[in-house]
Length: 296
Length: 342
Image 1 (spheres, rainbow over the protein chains, first blue to last red):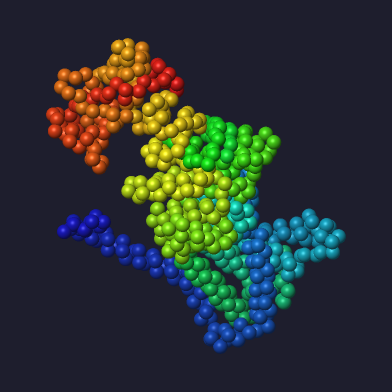
Image 2: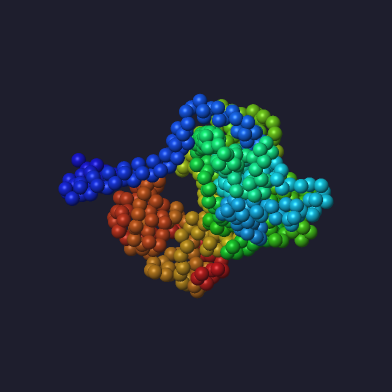
């Protein structure tokens, strides 16, 4: 009997072919094991580094709880700002055609490839006391550097573009005809965005927000340069790991495990979102498709 | 009364259309790319003509010269795009409510889709989708209806059914309605006036029968489904004898002289008796469509009664048939010289 769809099915494989298959098969398994081990071992090592009670004790230490509070607070604010400003911005960028549009999109993507430490330096020389806007901010009585606001800005600068990029892609994938029809049905721009575009792009928006949140949670380089690492004000979880690295490795590892758990939760959330909105996919760095409808 | 006179730049040509539309259905027929969708979108406010005016009664929607260009949400149009544009994430009832901002069970009932109120668009058939889209457009309380290829997404049987229903509904509504389609038969079936759109221009407007009988040119004739042939005419009695390029001849009831283009509809051609003059052509394909045979030939499309297979040679691919038409059914196209105006 011929087995369609499996070209070799009907033919008897020669011994040579069978040998090749066996070798390739075992080589494939070996490669898979090496890759998985490489990815999993550091995580296993962190979790098993100390007995469970020591780990749980580490979670409760003052330095850890301070860092948790700083991390959650700054990330929540950054997240809210990112969604509130980023969503309409991405919608406009996805819908409107204007000169310089590609330049704007490229600008949005620059922070994605900028080393975080350079981003922190940039923020410092832009908004710091001696920076570009330093005098203006000083005159207003605002001093941003080394404050919690600086942490929020660092997270926004580094993680925000992940959301923008995903949101532009998600909005670009919405059938423009539906938004046109909504307009003819009497819906103004805001109602079109809220009632049609956002629900239809929800999967992609959710995935992009989750990726950006995970990135913000792990933010280190920009924060330490622009906001410093002061326990209770600017010391986020990653900064706490770094500052405890010399002093108390057990404690550092405990916070590391905490960050892994948080990130895993976010990853799980994107998977669940991806399942309820199939259009969302995994949402990791989706490409921005070319804009527009071909005129009929 | 909708009044429009616009110029809209397209990639390949400029759409220039002037129309007046009362409480009637005007069907615009044109090939794909003729500018049909662009025209509807311009009326809806989704395209921005570089010049011209659009006005509904005394309400000015567009006056390009004065920079007046009302947003789509401020023009009261019921616009059905080609795939109906239903919102996939909203139920039928919510789709309709989107337009009027309130429940409209009356509209759902009127269009026979009351039982589908909770369904999502993805669960509906093509005909049901169209009715939902119509209900939604009507919930907007439109002053003009714009329908883009409302039958394109339907299969042949549903198409005829939906066309009759829509025709009846449009009569009942009495709204100025502009419907565009690529199929002249849709226009003929819906009644009302028909316009022929080609490369952004309206070539002819009139009753479907009138356009079919006296098409303005070869393009219009071809769109009405006619075979368009070139030939050389010689006066003969009160009419003319047309020697067709590629062989054969047909008689025309109207006088003509010199190079001409003629149009003959597939249903006016019949098989010639042995020895009778006519047009010979080779059959390439035959299929049965209801009570007739649709015969494709190298130069012609012919509809023959199913019984016409009895006469030799049989109506089969490869055989050469000789056909003729009554002189009054042979239309000599205006413009004279082969190639016509374009």
